[in-house]
Amino acid sequence: MGKLQALLCGAQVWYNIAMSEKEQIHVALPLKYRPRTFDDVVGQEHVTRTLRNAISSGRIANAYLFVGSRGIGKTTLSRIFAKAINCPTPNGVEPCGECESCRQIAEGRSIDVTELDGASHNKVEDVRPIIESVQFKPAASKYKIFIIDECHMLTPAAWNALLKTLEEPPPYVRFIFATTEGDKLLATIISRCQRFDLRRIQTHQIAARLRYICGKEGIDASEDALLAIARGAEGGMRDALSSLDQLIAFTGDKITEEDALGVFGLVSRKSLEDLAAAILKGDAAAILRAVESFDSAGKDMRRLAGELMQHFRNLVVCQALGGNAAGIEATPDQVKTLQEQAKLCPASRLFRVADQLAEMQDKLRYVLSVRTLIEMSLLRASRVATVATVDEVLRAIRALKPAAVPEAPAPVAARRVEDAAPCQIREPAAKPVAMRNESAAAAAPAAPRPPAELSADERDKILNDDKVNALLRQMPGAKITDLK
Ligand SMILES: Nc1ncnc2c1ncn2[C@@H]1O[C@H](COP(=O)(O)OP(=O)(O)O)[C@@H](O)[C@H]1O
Ligand SMILES: [Mg+2]
Ligand SMILES: [Zn+2]
Image: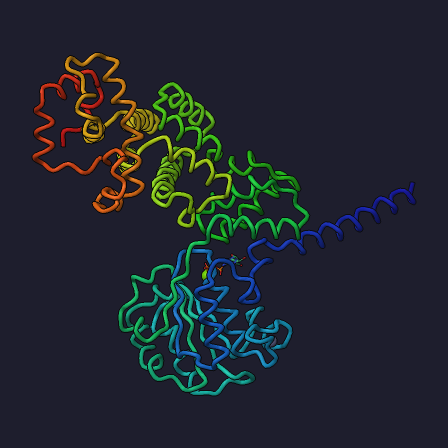
């Protein structure tokens, strides 16, 4: 019995040690994967390129200012830059990461590199030690560097105390400021710094970084799951890594798209695309079904509205740029869907749908019954997407040969015009220059005359024409949507 107890006790001790080691080892992913070199930093090439050049040419400015939203690399870049200019054994322009100086900076215990949190140390007393220590040369490095984070929180008095030093620092002193709110800084400060605006990181770039980290951590996550996490992070790498951490704690080593969507209350890409298609096709039943299912699944409806707006923005861009998807942030599969959907609706109507959605987003801020507003707005948007505008009808009529306008308009004839509207309209929208190119028209006399923009006079003439009015009466939507 005594032996068994000793054995159990031993096992318990061993288990405790193993567990505490495991707990100690766990470092939050954003910290564990903080980039250590410029090469590692994702999505800020415009900044890293300039910093690298500054280092290689030895032209280091007195003060740098990094501006950008949270979790996109401001602190990270400040530290890499500080390491790089103080590293005695750099690899090219990258800090070695191994020497005493690099390690001390990484661990926040370098005497020559001081980090100050401007949010909590924002008074004159807090910056006075900086001003006093500036007169002493660095102890062990080339530069004495001061990194001031959230610097917009410094009081005007604190800034005034710093200004003189900032303008004429001793040759061995450098400042690095970081802030989420560049607009709050006074011009006198900005003009003494080299300013860099960091970008929100693109979804696919975040997804790629997540893929790399999952590989290192032995996590099995689907591509869609990673894209969903990246979408949820809205351009912030720290948020993306924190969510990944949270998901691993929640689901273990395997992460699916469902898990990821659930965490953010996001709708899947596919459902979003289906909803957009329903709007473009005027399928009211499908729209209502979709909204119902999102609502009962507890999806974030405001977020949905924002993403839908983004989707229609992408459709407009896609239509304007044709096959070139450079202005769109999407995977190749998504681009394909966008290109197909862009064919469903002429540009003028896409703009009107986008207007409807913008209005919906606006109202969402203060409305109480979110679901009702979304249902009504999407139904209205679907109507706008499918009903021909008067301009479209007029252009279609103008494109017809005079004989083709019937004496007494029969429903069939009206239908022809309605059908003709979208395809007639797409041509000029795609090639606006060709429309006005007289010589091109002359060179190809056999081709039908392309419909041109109507002058106000022409428009009135056609609108007052009996035949046209008879025709319009057969097209219920046309009158309602536009007499602007
Ligand atoms: N551009 C980036 N590339 C790679 N990782 C990043 C990037 N930006 C942020 N991160 C991750 O997020 C964490 C926090 O970044 P940080 O630089 O502190 O953000 P902030 O802009 O708020 O100062 C980093 O430790 C890193 O893991
Ligand atoms: Mg920071
Ligand atoms: Zn080093």
